[in-house]
Length: 365
Image (tube, rainbow, N blue to C red):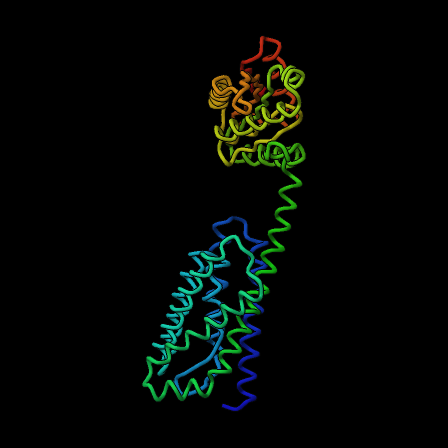
């Protein structure tokens, strides 16, 4: 093996590492669901490991060098259990398929790196993994070279003397390259997600805000109606909320709103849109809820609020009630979102005018 061949092989492996890291960024931004994203990330890391082994540097007959272990050792940190499992199995299977004198040693080294990667991911969970951390991981990648001693002792020593220093340096550089790029892309993605979430979230209740409701509500109702399913729109308003603010102060009023938000969220599905629409009003879009189901949900919420007074700092107890206005469509009669909202608002007005602490419903015309 000439120096030129070694350098060429190393550069090819570093190129594969960079390409895989870029695919990781594409997967983060383009996956339609979390489940699909997890599988695609697993495939990216597995593809990086296998791709690296497809362009190896052959340092001796049957013994190859590549950056597979950089992908294996980072898989847990950037993809979780699915990614480390898929990447490890793919890398071991491909290395055994390639064969050669170092096949068994290579497979053992892959499993060692997977175990080290899991340990590091658990230890660094929630912590920032900088280039220094990736350099240490690269050293552990190189440490997996002890698997070479599965070869005859003389052969292992000869190989390690010949390519040990080079493999040490390239494992460190490869792990730093893959880890650095992937980590930067993940952090950028998380920052953008945080900004997007904050722009659509009410800071007090952590529910969706009015802007998000006005954007997502019409689409959710239209999609549900297009499928021929029933859909409901619900407005919840705290009774005598102004009196709570006037008597106990706005800080207590804010706590009451947070209390109501928790009660509402705990009684609906994750697929339902729940938003603080304004002041003390919470608005919901409820896919697959016909008039009966929506009314039953409204009654359950009303009773839950009445049965769960807000307790402030252990010394103050405030009994609460809510008035609820509903609009329900059977999936056949489709009305514009704005019309549906007005009908729900009129139903809410009737609930308040009829004595509060009640549910009124408007059915699609």
